[in-house]
Length: 124
Image (tube, rainbow, N blue to C red; front, top):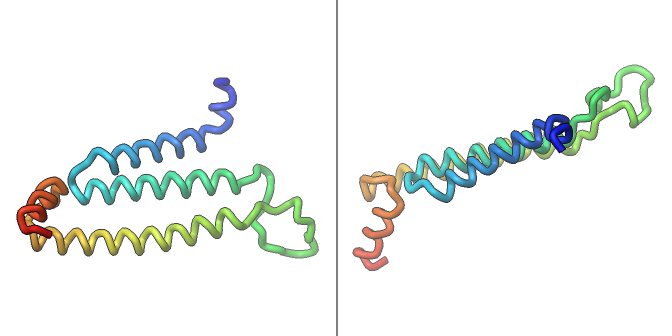
């Protein structure tokens, strides 16, 4: 079993990173720390997809010369998914940070429990 973990170390690292991000997302009360946890989870997914799309000994799918054999190229779909995911996660992070700024301006705290208590007091 140990040799399989060493052969797939990047996948193991991705799973560990995802676990760290997910735990951070669940256990932290500070909004900034939750956003960081979500970004760690995103990074873990991108690492996993990039590792699954890589094939040792193959080249990127750029046809140069007369080599039209598809067996010599890596699959471009995981790379495209990673690039698309990065763009989406940057947008989501920007939206979350802007909402966090608005919450801080209104409640003067980033603690979700404190914000929840204040919302209950306001009757919202």
